[in-house]
Image (cartoon, rainbow, N blue to C red; front, side, top):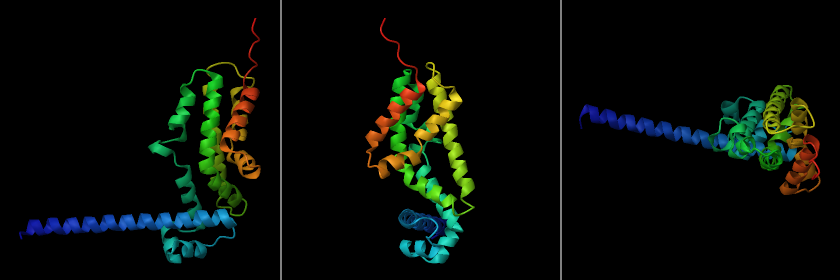
Length: 224
């Protein structure tokens, strides 16, 4: 075998081993995050220890530290996984169900689409959003992250309120409309209604739509 062929084979083996290590590291990372999410949800962020996460994931404690650094970083990585936009979008505003709200010319139809997209997104993100909210009260390292996420939601609601205002008058100015949407479409409100009072996702979406229509849009003129 020539020297060049040997070099090619050796390079291929190194590339294979490197890809295998990356895959194994990704699987380990995913196991740790799955374990952390379960433990955080079951017993809270504060009482959960790195050792418990490691034991649940079937890895050494040092592996958790080597992968994430500390418990706060485990939580922020978990947040990134759950809040990342689906379908490769750069932002939640680029999700197809959200751009449909932007592109719809009828305000009431916009709020119908908005309510259903928020109900679907909330069902996916509110478990980790609740972990983040409660963790921010016990870990000073988490509080800025919680405030950042709330600010991110507020900016998105400002954008959505602008879309609705572009197609007709509102009862409120755009800034106040965005604040109303930020509260009513929050994961915390959805959690209280769906987990606390047993509402279905559809019931929450119907309530959100009806409340936003009544709060944001002028009454329809009576037939002349």
